Image 1: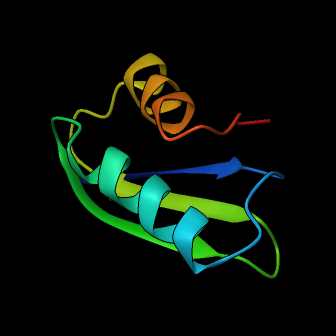
Image 2: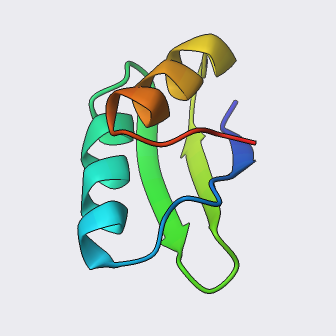
Length: 67
């Protein structure tokens, strides 16, 4: 069963931020897709068996904090 989790990442401001967050999240087990909207500062992660702690850790690894 596919699931979607959305995070607010207020520190993202540019395409570099978008790429860094997308790359880190894309490496997490179970992630099938990542959508980053710089306008709303929202990151939507889709996949199966998503682990909230692992996703938050990936966002932090990219240098940002998930609100």
